[in-house]
Image 1 (cartoon, protein in one colour):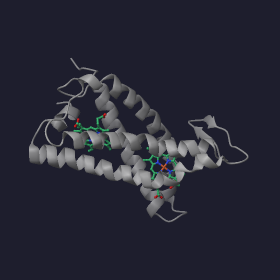
Image 2 (cartoon, rainbow, N blue to C red):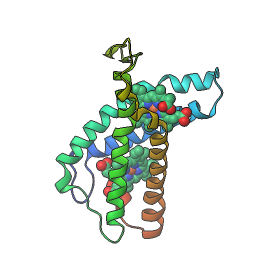
Image 3 (tube, protein in one colour):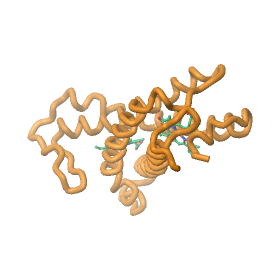
Image 4 (cartoon, helix red, strand yellow):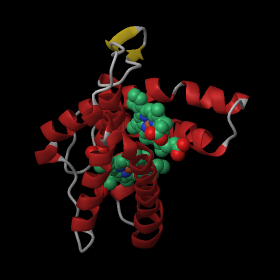
Length: 180
Ligand code: HEM
Ligand code: HEM
């Protein structure tokens, strides 16, 4: 029977759906950021890819809260890391989690204290203010840099999973998340 919770042998169904679903959504989010960065203004493809950035970013913020809570609830029975790379893997995952929270939070906070407000799926999350609250804008100045750092960490993470674990070490780490 399919197990919902994590076990020392593999991640459960909930963790796997969250991991792979969010990986796909992050790919779409980095694509929209790349279009914003690399394509000229007034470009139809840039407009299309950028049009979902806030909505998808807010969705990812909600999902990372769920994933973090589920991860904490399962922490005692999750697959553990062994060997010399164990500490590096844990530090890497914690860094990815930290940025998965901070990157969207920085812009959500800025919207909360900003003059344009924030709408999400038709709901007014924050109203537009008459005057900006200065301190809420500080972290957002680093939103782009933190976002690109997260993209680099994710690339390194994928490299570790596919090249180091699958091809070099030939261990079971990929299988714990792939589910087979
Ligand atoms: C995990 C979610 C998110 C990721 C990975 C992400 C990533 C990025 C990246 C890499 C850039 C830089 C693009 C460039 O260099 O031109 C960027 C820009 C931007 N993002 Fe996000 N973002 C996320 C969530 C959000 C949310 C929730 C909002 C709004 C509430 C938002 C609003 C913006 C805006 C307005 C910019 C352009 C100004 C700037 O660079 O700060 N993002 N995002
Ligand atoms: C092709 C893409 C990807 C592959 C092959 C992959 C593979 C894996 C594997 C094998 C694990 C288990 C590692 C372990 O327990 O030591 C894992 C965990 C993890 N992955 Fe990925 N991953 C991918 C994409 C991503 C992306 C895009 C992110 C986030 C931006 C991400 C974030 C995480 C995190 C935070 C964990 C720790 C476990 C958790 O709490 O979910 N992964 N990944």
